[in-house]
Structure formats: C-alpha cells, structure tokens
Image 1 (spheres, one colour):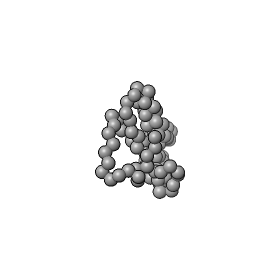
Image 2 (tube, helix red, strand yellow):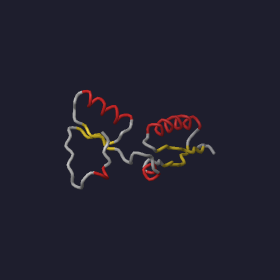
Image 3 (cartoon, helix red, strand yellow):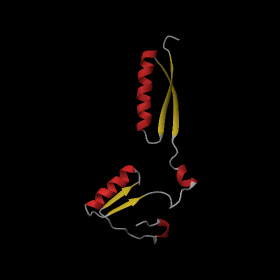
Image 4 (cartoon, one colour):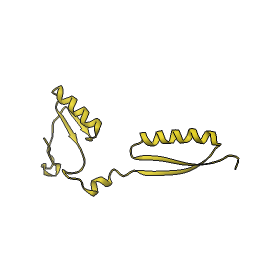
Amino acid sequence: MFIDSRNVEQRAVVETTVCIIGAGVAGITLALEMDKHGIDTVMLESGGYKPDDATRDLYRGENVVFLIPMRMEAAAAFWVAAATAGAAGAGRSIHGTSKSATG
C-alpha cells in the first residue's frame, strides 16, 4: 500500500515493528524479506508518485579535486584506490591530480 505523507493527518502515529528508510535496492529487498516472515514494516522514501526536479536534486553528488605530490608508481596505486572509493561512496567521487615528486 502506498500512502503520501502529505495526506496523513498531523501528529498521526504509525505503529510498526520495522521502519526502513529508503526504497533503494537494499531497502526493497529488506522489506520483501520482512513481508515473507510476516513482520509489520513501513518503508519511507522521499518524493511523490512521479519524478520531480526538487526530489532529484536531493541526490546530487559532488566532485572533490585535490593535488598530491607523488612518484608515478604511487600515482597508479592512488588512482586505483580513488576509483574504488568513488564507486563505493554515496554520490561522492574522488578525483586526484598527481604531480611527480621529481618535477
């Protein structure tokens, strides 16, 4: 069942065993598992029934750029680590610009 919270009476109380914040892959998977086991669950997600720019703007990430002096061998290891951190970060990617320690 879907309920738009803008239509819920102020100060209304929703009683549940589990409250899941976010209807991403993990949230939906968890909610389905709870349902299989008969556990009362509420899932909260931002936005309405249709996509809108204001809600989409909440998920914008940022890029961070910084300089690190290092040798070329270390630069390769840095880029691998930075790419991994960027992929694992929540909407935040890391970009580094290396300068050789010798020039």
